[in-house]
Image (cartoon, rainbow, N blue to C red):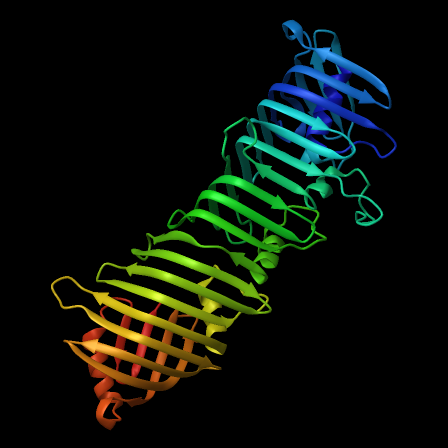
Length: 446
């Protein structure tokens, strides 16, 4: 019937016509929608327990006793229809309707409240699936608020009641689906249509908040997989970052760019596994901040393992130049910025290889400016401690994915200046399949 058509349209577009005052309070058993081939034909079903609809002061209360209002959905590009026991009903859609952009969606055991001021939906399960991406939520509450007033008007090209725009200005996601439910479960998949790169994210979300110019999140746990080979896991992740206040649609590149240029991450523990490179990082991170084109990173401890050895790091403090276009998740881009400007201190780096004695370097200070490199350190090898100062040049070979360090001077204990002697000790000390030493050049494969 017509009520079902109104409810279904609202669920997809989150908007009413600007001249209509409409509110909906709906208890949904099950909504399933599958866009038919060529956009024409049967498209799913809508089953609900009860509905309260106020349309310009005309109130309609419906209890779906004996499922007499259950509806079958059918669509055409400019039409949305419903089939019930009472006949067929439907209405016209705009060619650019949100419904036409959705391939598949499902909503189970959920509550929907929608009016001029809010979208409030909570339930056991919600999914939106398109060709290149999908979002799935379990045991969740999602709330969007209309901020259109004289102090914070919506952009001029958006209707005052456009709830899609509202969600990009004020949104809260959490696990308040039921008492004592600590977190919502979020699953996100995306395939980049230009590069073919695949990303999967699974998170237990205590809270996720979008405001006019900020995004903040508290994840009980999070796990991401890139291209089925690069795995990142983190526990108790707290972050806040900047957001483009004019954002009106799900543009991942814009979201990521704004966030990575003004970012704050509280203490967390993370694990990074690269199956292709057969490497493993375990990190106890104290703080990560990006502000005013500088990144600040503090690490309590960390370990790096490959097929040859394990390297551990303690008390690392780093700040480096971070250009606006640099993606912090891209190692090559980060290293380019680091070469331009870096200040680094590390309490100790220790290297362990099976059947060989450990080696360690302590009290490390590194300065890099426009490729010029200066290193102070205290090295330990075979029980002997030695303070060294190294100067040189550092360059990045992007094509070969290599970092090349050319040592031009080395000051060793007892007044010895010898690059050759330094390189000899480095060959004995550094054990990694990714590091090679030839003459006065150290090459790190990335």
